[in-house]
Length: 131
Image 1: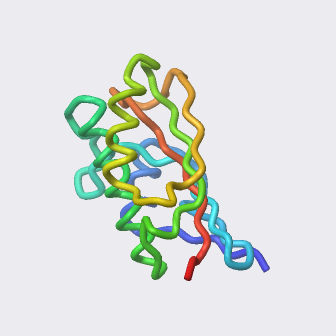
Image 2 (image 1 turned 60 degrees about the horizontal axis):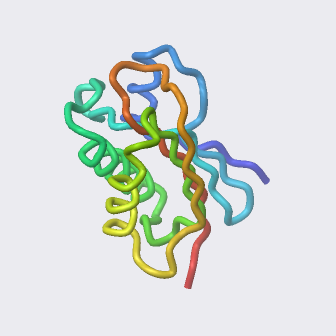
Image 3 (image 1 turned 90 degrees about the vertical axis):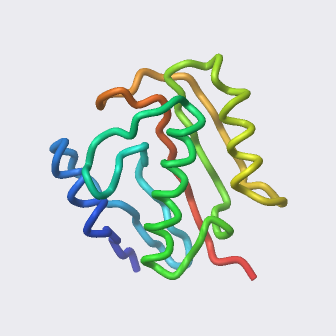
């Protein structure tokens, strides 16, 4: 069975930018999340800051949404990151290693122009309950 999940704050942020998609789709125990950015989930504005700040805010947003469905960042098994500047990879790598613990999730990082505001990073994730 497929179940669509959305948090009120994430849905409001998506609505502000007229973006139509689910926050997450659950298929069995697997959750696949839409791209998350450094948007303040209270004001719906892009968070100020450098790539490190935006990466941390984005991962904090994931943590809040995961908590709504009884999971945490410890349940993340796959991360995809899109950076506006590939030269920022080393900074993103430091944040990734600081936020996640071994065994680290699988990861892909690519450079790509992003479409909303002054976003420096967009992250997608896949989770599965782990023992």
